[in-house]
Length: 410
Image (cartoon, rainbow, N blue to C red):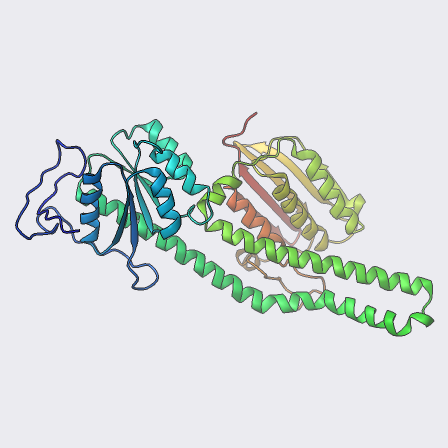
């Protein structure tokens, strides 16, 4: 595009645009800022989609961004903008709010509902940037607002900020995935081998000596195989869950969706899962429940997962005959779940090092370590805007999960 602009003081609104047309000067004169924009995928040119039904506005934004080295594509309305976004998958979208056929909000909503386009940074441009409109756009998933009229400096600043944030999120996700791959490659073979050895060993005995074994012996071996299989199933499930949570952590849209879920009456669910863990540990009489039905800002599925993981650890690392207490309380505008035991406890160093696939003091204790249990519970709590705290000493351990109650429907 060879439009010759020397200076543009304001880009939107016909009364605010100052244009000085020279013979051969592109948009590089006074008033233009030379900004170094971060490259995506090495040195590849970043692609920006402009969606606006006013051609002259698209052309000016096009020229301004093209002068900064961007690959710029245009769409005259929301419908074509959605189609072009699906096809080109741009690094950033600038979209006007007030358009015929499909306005900016509808365009944004359409793109946020598709996996391929839901994470593309999206800036809404509008001359009606009131609080209600901005809030509506943010609820739909807009990343930023650019109020009209705006200067080139403001345009460059908004584009720069969104691209840098997008790149930072991408790098953080890649870092987490690399860390996840490293942990899986190191720990998965070891974790799977223990229950697998039990299955293979007893399976071999049953195959080779079935004719000489007594019914009681066969039943005992079958029980060991079943228990080892269930343990193996849980390990695989936990690895998959943790991997899924790490991916969620890098996606603001998924985090927002998670935080919309609620469990209105959690007491029954918590009791059922706590009793199941107590029965599995053959310690039903050690379980102490102090539950009240305060709504929990988390889905039933994930609340149950937290209860299972933390209560299982409490039984696993405490002696039979000592209490494991599960308490639900409401204080300071928070839903609080506290699980306490009288076990050996963790050192301060161990508490600080809670992370994926870590097992504390494995060489010192024969029991299977915490593995992913506390890591999953901690990650779930954080993704829901809460905090998981561990207090531990020689008298036992207390794990508290605190979730904010903002937004509850009483």
